[in-house]
Length: 152
Image (cartoon, rainbow, N blue to C red):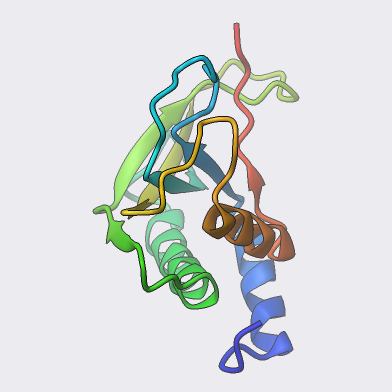
């Protein structure tokens, strides 16, 4: 843990992220390891669940953005690698089908942001770069899990 993040701050961030239901996904998904071309980038997409009925009126918008901004700053500070380039996307909404453990057929809506890391040393699709492993470890410390989407 970086010296500028105290255990109390880490716990506060963990609680905030839990309350607004934050998830992540990693791109590119390594579903097809038969592709032989090495990859020199990856993206971490962060999602905060929003109220699909009132996406612009709900408290989730400003609160989710503030929490995701804090999470982005934390990840960048904890997993900094001066050899790679970091690009942060604008804020956007992502829609997804319900999670497998939900009985509702309602569409899920997320406030999302993407961190794209590029110019990494090329790595085969079936392997994970060290930087990504570090980011996953930091997300795990914060109890942020991968997004689960029911596949039909």
